[in-house]
Length: 349
Image 1 (tube, one colour):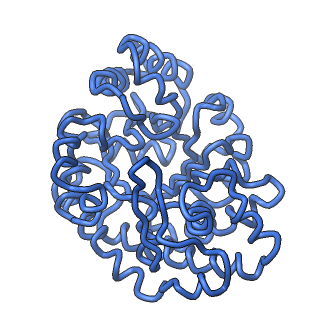
Image 2 (tube, rainbow, N blue to C red):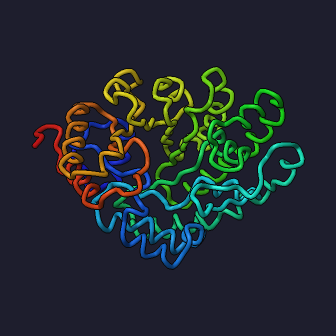
Image 3 (cartoon, helix red, strand yellow):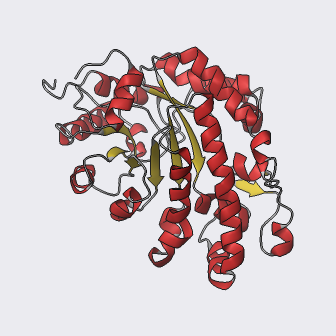
């Protein structure tokens, strides 16, 4: 099936239509691998870029000015939600994220201010509207948020979660307080997702980045049930793409959340995942981003190999299995995008 523009192709893939090629966008496609982004970073901090609608819109559009991508994803951060709830974050000089305080007891939880969080997040909606105006109806636009489990992990651990000792301890030792936190975060995520859709996002991606560190015995209670609430809160106004890192073996459980697209990392065979999922669930992925760090021919060959393996499979969105890594070459991204956009499922080159 041929489509007039990238937005139509992207939405058609979600609905499982038979396409001449899959749509393509890349996780973390706007970022430091681009020289124009690095030039902006010399003038503005990451938080300034994310908090300023005009700058966030500019960064969002940078990769689309270089590559014929089928979707833009708004430049932001999953931690804007804890920040809006009263727990700011910063970047350590030695690298890594640091929350302004840790949630360890009831007193810490009382410092949160979820009331008014959506109003404090309006700057993201403004950025979405600016990008939507620029893209018009020709290119898809994605909004995103972190999963409540992943966000709570940062909030309780006080930075990069590591082994998630504190959040697991909270779940096991004070389930009522754990649920209270997750309910609060989920409520903000629900409102935030709806706001992004109203501002012009075509779909919402939920990043459960720390899913793989959640014990399998509690994953439903600690994470999936809260994701399901976000999906339901959209009431079908926009599709949801769910990325749960290192949880491909739980594909059926992920699909049960109601997400229309499951995004997978490189730790599983995408063809097998596609074949065992219901036809109405699309899949996204899953090229290893490390393949964009070296020889351009390796990038091109790996991309073509994945395309060949998925030939004839409906509902595929081409993507990396995680965000682009530092050191990714612009020429590698160009080779990947060219391989996908010139691919033809009927007459492969």
